[in-house]
Length: 238
Image (cartoon, rainbow, N blue to C red; front, side, top):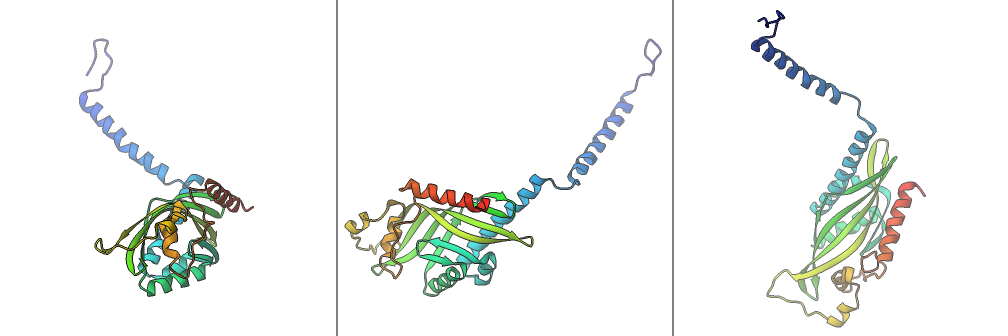
């Protein structure tokens, strides 16, 4: 098709064909971008996902009683410091098994973990709702604790393992498992426990694990600041 000046103009069919060729070529370029070697940011994201998955697998194994899987998640020299135990990972796993064998039921509902990396070390913080079905003076109750799980993990020979666990305690509540069976609560005793884990302390006082007063909790902000600083120092290798 010629214009008035005599030059050749592309017809409609040629224009459509050219557009289709360009459209077909565009995905090929996009695919080529994805075939490049992963960047440092991609490697960091992969490591963060691996640490998050490790945390989820450990908590799931603990709740499900899969002791082999739980053990595989931990370093043998890891330290666990929580309300009812301060000791090594093997001690933590053994005590958890004994509690489960006695009929104790605990369930963890986790929110996504926030993972911070530095070389072959990682720290992570996981918001958690922890439900524990325990007896108080012969009456089964459910104590729900709202906590933040503070993890340490390290990478050895390409594999991540858990190197530590502590908690920041926020608040807890208590309800009887059977609404018709209410425990008799000593209000004076209850009021003497810290607000961040009051009901947990009340229940622990009725076991061999006496309640601790030194745990990190939001009712004592300085304890939270101290544990966060300790996490950062460990991450930096200090």
